[in-house]
Length: 469
Ligand code: SAH
Ligand code: SF4
Ligand code: F3S
Image 1 (cartoon, rainbow, N blue to C red):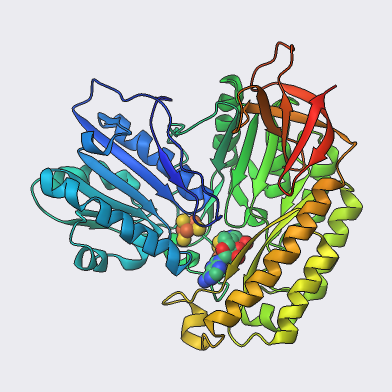
Image 2 (cartoon, rainbow, N blue to C red):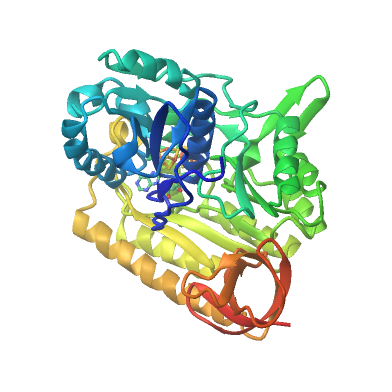
């Protein structure tokens, strides 16, 4: 089923991935089309959904016009993410008028947040399914075919889809994402995720290691372990308790040829044990995404991040002590409720101290139902938020450019992921620190999935350019 066509829009991460892969399958009684928005966990969930539908005899299609079932796997993290989905639904209107039998389903976080309200607001929608209810999707489709509107947004305390083997959508055959947990218990006051994804639960370690081993045996050479807060991974069964450091090590031991990454780490939870595991295993990539959100302790408290500016800076120091050449990136929110100009300056100064290689930066967007929406006033004017965000982006741009320029002259081990986006005469792949490296193919007889050493001769703010050595 690797030939499934899949469109993705990375809204949460501000990327612009919008990719299509493969041919349409012919011998199915019904066809579905799926688009994914939001974070990697949503993309990963779409692969679970594809697997559930395939088992019920649905074939995938990349052609909206051929689809009996059109699915949008949605994100609620910021208002703009939801607006994107609503606009997309409007674009389906003409199709639906032409083919009234075509069903439209909304999955994911927006489905969970709005529940049956979504059916009232968006008349086009036939089915609404939350992130823990995907097993019920085939049944809901059957019912919806009779003209009934269907909703299942039950959240679960234990659903992990551990037994479902994901259909790899839009895959390069080299790198894959593996969900290790679902939900989040952290209750950051700005965040909608605890409401849309429910309680945190960890998937059993054996099923994770098996999935990674299968991927490796099928030619994949890199897995990214996914969770909203991977450092709080904890799973107990008769064979004992596995924490994140232990899980990381178990996956690393599958093969030295299999790279391991993970996302996201919470500064309050990442342990020395995880850092030491990273330092011990060459194949655990030396890269940590450590969202700071704000550099000011009062704002961090209002956000309920549960760490202070000093705690965060100490973590960064610890990372650099234990893993000297570790890549570091972050998430930043500009203009959170009551943030003063000085407090905004603290965010800029935390960036100066941490020197991120890359950052995802956002203006605060109030989300209905969150603790911040209930407790605090969204009182920073839009133009001020925007200006602060611009300052953050400008500073980060200079840090990224500097960080990439510092790599000129160094040699990195790169895992080839495929042709460079700009030219099929060049390979692209990432180094351990997660920086994209582009280099000419030359005469060498190489293929994606292989490791090569590349010496860097120049850089931009987001890419390293080099030659094989
Ligand atoms: N679990 C991850 C974050 C997931 S959401 C963590 O704890 O770090 C990804 C990012 O979106 C967050 O890190 C935050 O920077 C941003 N974000 C979340 N809610 C937001 C909101 N209401 N407004 C603006 N940005 C938000
Ligand atoms: Fe949201 Fe905080 Fe959980 Fe991340 S840790 S998903 S920001 S509540
Ligand atoms: Fe968006 Fe839900 Fe992910 S809100 S960021 S798709 S967990």
